[in-house]
Length: 103
Image: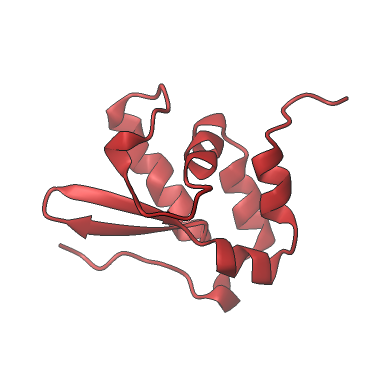
């Protein structure tokens, strides 16, 4: 299994994070990980076909939003909340509020 890219805290860029969060499926994944607990990827209901979820996980991982870990045939996801809060204070608060329409 190849080594997965997980950017360091210093490598996380706001433009990459915002681009990753700009897709509704990726927002669902991030909100599902809000508890901070490691979650089996199959436990997150996104409504997206399995064939596209690998792409969404890669975008989230490479932007520094999640950590992905392989164990056997399963993938486990964890939100990198500490790194994101250190880089962009308050960003996750806005993401978790879940507002999708202007007031």
